[in-house]
Length: 359
Image (cartoon, rainbow, N blue to C red):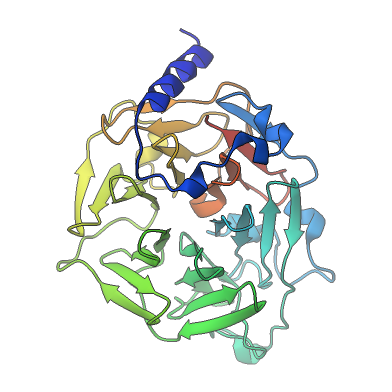
């Protein structure tokens, strides 16, 4: 059976499953999506021309290598309000600029949406610059988008230029166009933090190497959820299965935290690609319409996990990026954009962005 036929059978099965937990906002009528997205077949990749981050870098250039905006353990997150993938990174001795970038999926454009702030020696290894904006840092998987508040959330990281761990939590307030230092001194355990926003509770679930927390913007507090340390490797990525209320992590197998009990277990799966256990922070996102955990880690192949059966299925039908993912990780630079029913990918500042349509 061809890959295309396999994908067609998978999508037929998806259509037959009732998913009452899917929000109305996830079920966007096809007529509201751009024609070029509607024209894509299920399982199809499309490259977005002229979307390299290098084309919108600040001038003059910032100190360091701008490739590290992506390559230096840097992540991203989807802004579902405006249908875009946000990218932020740098840090340690790699790149000193703290500007934000956004791939606007609907218009197929890459934009620089904030300007870099001046860095002074006094700011070295400190959370904030003199103008009150955050210093550059490796962002790992610590980014999330707080839909109800229209804010970007970032926890943890590796600060420029020394690589010290960031103890602070920041948000970027999009309506006010302002960075806000929320908590200056809540240190998480280890560097590879995973943060995922939960639409149902309006919290960010945050997993560090040992503990599991919920962050609430209204109270500006973290609440520890598990009663015993539950250690994970720091080379993982996470998504929330909103139907089953599971916090799903891949990179060292499939590890799952039940959001009802906050207990972690390891899930047995079949047909898993090698990157599921490679400890390289692969890209992972949940598609609530297809009811699949969907993952990418280089090349054209995309894998979907059925959380009921534990089966992984390769779902891409055409040639995609054709390049490897950074060994440091993809983190949230692979994300599901609900307005358009596609996944967006930013893999390198010198490569165009891509989108992938599962259904």
